[in-house]
Image (cartoon, rainbow over all chains, first blue to last red; front, side, top):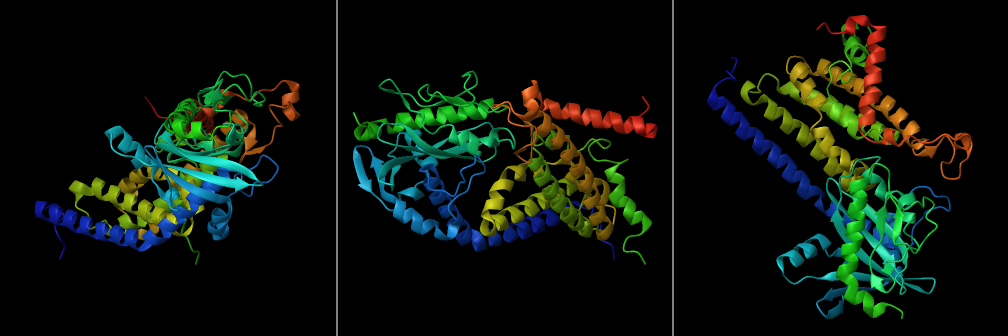
Amino acid sequence: MAISTDKNSYTVIFAAVMVVVVGSILAFLASALRPNIKENERFEKQQNILYAMGVNENGDDAGSVNFIPTDVVEDEFASYIKEQLVIQGDQITQDDEAYLIDLKKQLANIKKGEDYKLPVFIGEKDGKKFYIIPMYGKGLWDAIWGFIALDNTMTVQGVYFDHKGETPGLGANIKMRYFMDDFKGETILKGTQYAGIDVAKGNNDPLNNTKDDNEVDALAGATITGNGVSAMIRETVKLYKPYLETIRAK
Amino acid sequence: MALLSKKDTNLITDPLADNNPITIQVLGICSALAITAELKASLVMAISVMFVLGAGNVVISLMRNIIPSKIRIIVQLIVVATLVIIVDQVLKAFAYELSKTLAVFVGLIITNCIIMGRFEAFALANGPWRSFLDGIGNSLGYGVILVIVGFFRELLGSGTLFGIPVLGDPIAKTGLYATGYENNGFMIIPPAALIVVGIIIWVQRSRNPALVEEN
């Protein structure tokens, strides 16, 4: 017997059944995979933080981005990151899980005028101290984020950028090594003022030889993503300025 | 007996030439513009679409007799979205690196008109095996154009292929750049894809005048 698929009642029942079936499949999948996904995200954060301070498996050639492998990242993270701090108003406390703080939520709290926490990670490599600060901002299509590693002269030691949905081949190139490497050696200070680093189209310095101009060369075809990166760095520097002032060598 | 009959073979080969989804059916143009600045992105997108369209066509074909015609588009959309999300979640759990690479494509796949177009035009009226072949054929046809466009845009726009410099170093002026050659920045931006696709359409129709529409 053929069912009449044109009847309204059939349509409604079909839609209801479909929603329930699809909903259960997805809900089941999401809860079954959550532990794995959470762990992967945790490892990724550790890899990103270490990458910014120069602990990675990059070769000497300006090739691709290579993180510390996931199976050793936890140990490496524990050995390189000496302190994890949480800044809350005037209070600075230690918290070994500070790297799990979701900066997006904290920035939303700032907007709402509520209390917020700002994490800072202090790493040590070859006797040198790195202050690694998380960043979060907007690109062309969606969120962009990253980490910036500074020393006590406010010189950038390394950065890591990532994005949710920038255009492949254009804005997505902010996570390419040639772009991130350009930030190394730049300073976030302009004179004695905190400025940031601009992704500039007209800086006429494609090899990035000038390190004190607060500018790096922009990516072709990615103006808005580049502006987003500039804004993200500027906002982060503004936010962390009181803390940076305490660690800055004068 | 051959694995594929003549008719089945045509399902795969037609979209590669005379019934190409991009140049003849004019479907999937949006993603062809968006992600072809690099050859690698083109290839990743082509493979992802092949998977989703192959699997989606089979699912829709199996459901074709029970889908109420009034809400068939919504049902199709749910099927694509579910497939893509399942793949995305599984990759996130077991192949995190790969999922990061593919994340930006997820939205593009769900809204790709080729997928909806083939569900609507083929899978709703044909059996699962033929729908599967149709899905593979159309995604191949789509992929071929994507790769051709990606090849020219990356080569002329950045002087690289798969990110590897093939024309020399534009900053140190080696290789071809020593002769005064410059990368064409226009090739990087989306309008260049329209022009490359346009040239492909032009070449294809000059070779086969039967494809030219009367107006």
